[in-house]
Image 1 (spheres, helix red, strand yellow):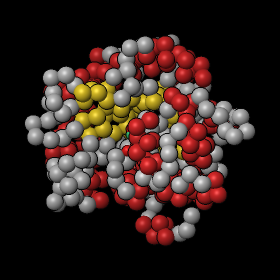
Image 2 (cartoon, helix red, strand yellow; image 1 turned 90 degrees about the vertical axis):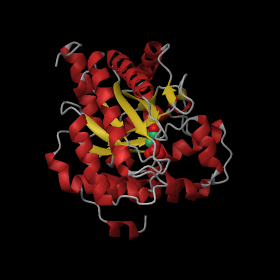
Image 3 (spheres, protein in one colour; image 1 turned 60 degrees about the vertical axis):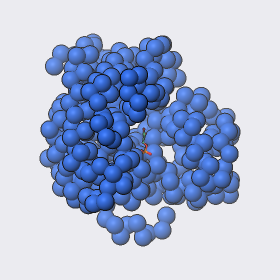
Image 4 (cartoon, protein in one colour; image 1 turned 120 degrees about the vertical axis):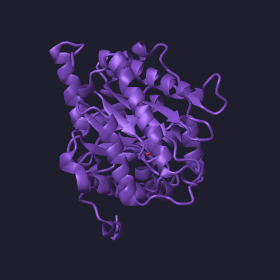
Length: 349
Ligand code: 13P
């Protein structure tokens, strides 16, 4: 595969990408949009304002020891501009921990014209300039999430192609601007579909995505795939167990993801924290050393949930909430090496 960049530029992308998925580490997603923040905060009785969002993200980013298991966080546009109570920019907090700042650059999933239920992710207009700004602020990787919904007669070709094309163009722009792109096709867990359906849909979007990445000359050693697991729909009457999810997910990845890619990370997508960790562990327990790429986490809810519930907006809860963040990050770090076991859940954080 030809490198579209100078050797130095390519080497920097490759080094960043490898550091993002370093052994025993994963990524923490804290890039929730305003709407998602509103929803999550509301569930614990906190009003979502610029200040409460800052306090919450401060709690997450300043968690003592987080850097042992988290190579970097994915920030939101508002968050990358914010500071701690003491006035230290969040980006500096991250860099001082030896972590890599990441940034969500897509502008959300919007209705796909011509399809009543599907979405296409927008955000390509002006992206080159935004990447330049984020790079100047210290970001070294980026994320773009596409949403694929399973339902009667969907996903359509139109949805696969439109989203894969946008992700590939985003990835090429990122690499040009010195950011490692995370391409994230999320097959939603919502619905009563079975695991076979999820497998076919996941395989199809991966194939389309890597085809488009080839067309747009995305350099794979400097890119990371963030994907959903091959799993039964939430409302499926017969949900597959942990071993089957792990097996199907790994086999689907092996069929569709080029070996040259820097790494594969998972979103949690509505699985419980324990389930997300158990699935990641089952994959690595069996396949860790046999896979061509590291397989690790890039969870938001599955790491944050216990801490958010404990925090509930009160400063006196911050310390214990941070212990809960640390605990989930640690367990996922172990799971990324196949070294987690369920009884570790009982040890108090
Ligand atoms: P969840 O782990 O909560 O699914 O979020 C990960 C993410 O970044 C989705 O884009």
